[in-house]
Amino acid sequence: MARELISKNATKSVYRDGDKAIKSFCQGFPKAEVLNEALISARIEEIGGINIPATLAVSVDVDGCWSITKDFINGKTLKQLMDENPDKLDEYMEQMVDLQLTIHSKTCPLLNKLKDKMIRQISDAEGLNSVNRYDLLTRLDGMPKHVKLCHGDFQPNNIIVTDDGTMYVLDWVHATQGNASADAARTYLLLCLEDQNKADKYMELFCEKTDTDRRYVQQWLPLVAAAQLTKHRPEEAELLHKWVDICDYQ
Image (cartoon, rainbow, N blue to C red):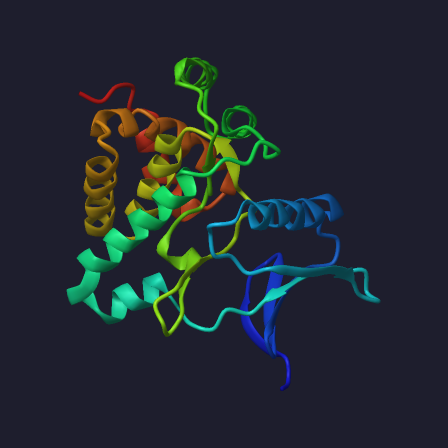
């Protein structure tokens, strides 16, 4: 079977080669980031209880481009299924939240701390004045410290559903240990950037299933919005800055 291009962006291309998926990074992409991504995935594999593609190899080609080879998971993303079957949105959203709660039930002590990562992101975020930055870092310092496994980019695009309904979670490069509600706030933010209706359904289900006050999750929104600014996506900037400027939820 010839190698088939699955997706491509400015920093990497993903190919299918038989039963393997190869993520090939562009020339000059930092070696440390490639190795860190592979290490995080390996640590998640060792936890058990979560379906993820197994990491098979890390290599570098003759042009100096690094790649990570993993199992190829044949199926559709949860986003595709939601778009194709709008009548099943509630069912899919419930499965998605249950999957995230399974992740949050795990711990991985060797991962970086979520708060430490957010401190770096907020400190580096562009477009924040010194008062905004100080207020955000002060708020972050006062938030409860937890050590639950957090995916960091949990959204329908990062969930593959096989023909038998098994769900695999992809792209663990942002995984940390921290507060589950911070992870939920980030998922809510990512959904809002695509579809407010899905975001609201998600928030309602997460709070109901975890017996969490919606306002507690919302308190994380200015923080995760500021962290998201480090992605440098112009199409998101207006909405993110609007959330950053929200001081308190009633």
